[in-house]
Amino acid sequence: MIKIPSPINYIQHEKQQWIDVQKGLQNAFDQADVFLNFLQPFLRKRIFIFAGSSHNGLQGLALASRLAHLVESNADLTKGVEYIEVIHVTPHDVCDGNTLAMREALPRRVHVTVVTERFSPPIIVDDDLIIDALFGVDIESALEKGFAALSVFINNQPAITVSLELPTGLFPDASNVNTVDKMVIPDITLLSLPTQAEMMTDAHHLMGKRIRTYQDDMIALQRADEAAKKLINVPLDAYHKGDFGHGLLVAGCFGMAGASIMAAKGALYSGIGKLSILSPQCNRQIVQMSVPQAICVFDNSEFFWKGTVEQYEKYQAICIGPGIGTHEETLISMRYMFKRFMKSKTPLILDADALSLIGEERSLMDYIPHGSILTPHYGELERLVGRCTNHAEALKRAIELAHDIEGTIIFKGWRSAIIHHDGNVYFNESGNVGMATSGSGDVLSGILLALKAQGYDSLSAALLGTYIHGKAGDIAADHYTRIAMNALSIIEFIPEAWRKILKV
Figure 1 (cartoon, rainbow, N blue to C red):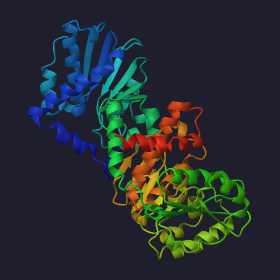
Figure 2 (figure 1 turned 90 degrees about the vertical axis):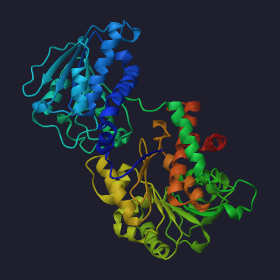
Figure 3 (figure 1 turned 120 degrees about the horizontal axis):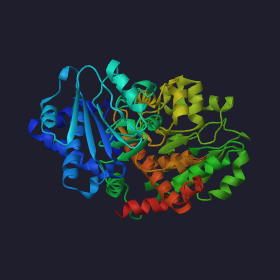
Figure 4 (figure 1 turned 180 degrees about the vertical axis):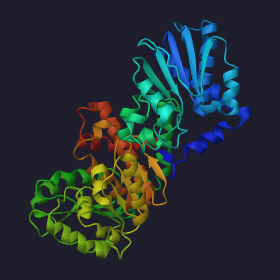
């Protein structure tokens, strides 16, 4: 999990890291060495580095210095590099002491052009390399005037462009993805620290190929498994099944029995002691045959849920939504039950059609018990909070929603965001694009139901459940490929996901 506090303030983080004069230059050289390891395949005969006046520019200058020294020593890393030019863009020649010191200390091999007012563009060809080190994360407003024109110039060049840290002009929270005419659009972005922009799907096309330089994938995987294991707090010795919770799954309607089955199996593979399934009469046979471990409680309705949940106090958690449909009678049932749930402390897991029904009657959100978990994807979230201009705004609205309901939101996506009502946001690091398939969300709902029934707090259940779900998906992708896997593949490998985490 990557935790990003809200509000996110990368600029202050970077200023704290780079302002110290004694440490600033060394930090820049250390980061330049990291960048060089990833830049090697893209180095060209001529390299043009556009550097700004802040810490990102300092990184660019340090990179130019390292490149020049390596060329001088005939290092294999820079074989073929013959020309290095720094275009140092410093309006009114104002820059911090570190940046000025770095520029003045550049080796003679580096050609330096200082741009304070007018810019005379160099002639750049397709065999050259452009490195964008103008702003990185140190940006607070949209590019204007000269910088906007410079971004257009860079975008119009035929050479490969590599941005350091973030593309110039893109905000760290990706809230300005709709203003692509005022940012550099690189072929490659070398990411040096986690940002919200990296996690926002609609920002990916603005970053080109994204390469993380701030963590080793294998080390990150091990750390993520270790973090997930620490969340496991239910005793694994033999106890009575009642000690592992009793959960109720309200799922399925005519033609959607599969949703109830997949959610049920997600729960049964995640440690729940007892599972009851409430579904309409039409699903009686298929549910009982497919999930014989569950207690089947059938609604009086033939085709969809229009009854009530009896004796709901006996359940430690209730999941409503997978495949229940959006019939008017179902909405009436939800309205009646939510008013009863509000008086209880039984947490809810709300997914799929339940969220769509709440979107039709938003006043129902006032009755959601504290500590509940909602699992919307982008479209479902918009039904709850209204239209959003981009993913960053949707995330902001989800943070507000979590606060309003005093619960946890799992904003599902490429990197699902787990949002606690205290404002903290965690991005899940497991999972893959093969999980974007029918039934995958139902499996997650079942896992969450199992964890909540066992007594996990909502945040721990959301963090652990989302991670296990994604890890099972990753194992399934390795086994079947991302193309051939489906929701049943995820279910198949939930036990293996638990096993891998428990043995860390």
